[in-house]
Amino acid sequence: MTTREAFAQLVERRGWHRELGISDSAAYSAKNHFKTGEIAIEKMEELLEKAGFKVIQEKKWEKKI
Image (cartoon, rainbow, N blue to C red; front, side):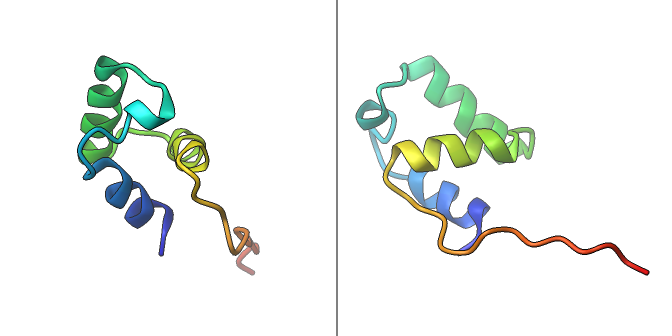
């Protein structure tokens, strides 16, 4: 699954933030920023890692010629 799909799965669980040790307001903010597309990919990755998700394939980049 993509980072966005994994994050959507994470934030849809009731009380997801409690197991990560983040406040209600921080969780609300992260979820709303996700819904509006304003959350940074790095923040999603940080929270996913805290929740026990792991990257199974690193990102790969190449320059278009």
